[in-house]
Amino acid sequence: MNVFRIIGGFFYFSYLIFTTLKYPEEPGRVEVNGQNLFFVTRGPMDGKPVVLLHGNGGSHKSLRTQAMELAKAGYRVYSPDSRGQGANAPLTEYHYADMAEDSYCFIKKLGLDKPAVYGWSDGGIIALMLEMAHPGTSGPIVISGANLYPDCGDDFESFKEWIISEGTPLAMMMLSEPQIAPEDLSAIKGPVLVTAGSKDLISIEHTRLIADSLPCSELEIFEGETHGSFIKKSPKIGRRMLEFFRKNNY
Image (cartoon, rainbow, N blue to C red):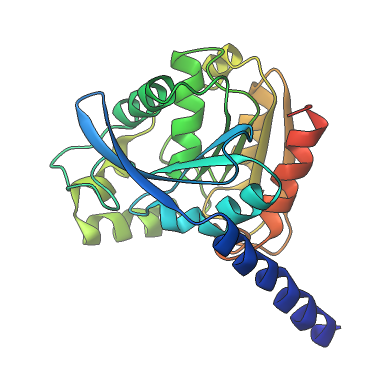
């Protein structure tokens, strides 16, 4: 069985390499909400738009596998680096609400019409807050490992110690943010796929709370997976995302 998985993985990532050659990353910058954000695009120009939002301290590179999967499926993928991260100059203060507004302005500035949005970790938080603040902006939404408030896992105290040891403004934000009331998720009327790993930093109960608080949601827990193992260089979340988009005629 392991041999078949290795062979399958080889062929899968081989086709992603061909996708890279056919649809290379196209870098750009855009002024939004007082920020000069770096971003890359990939995929056919006439493809339906998908915006990918990375996690805390990451960049567009964090979701490169998913960008290639989506481009191969015919979507036009937009991958911004969040403010103060990736190729953007670091800041002294960070707030999720600012990043959500950046994402909204990014979508409007580029003229994207109800793009699908995928967010991992902090990106998932931003995707939710974007649609809460500006209902109807997004098409189908997929989130992985998102949380509504800091104390959302079975081992939050250990995670808190790590945050304090890091001590950066970006990390310290996670001690007090986000602060999303579950009932406020009712503002999000469109379809949302809520995902996490069974061994995620975010507890299954908290992930289920998010799904149950959304008017139109699906929940999927990836068995045996951690916060990032089904995302980093993995085809799992991309395949599930494509299924969800097609189910919702996107």
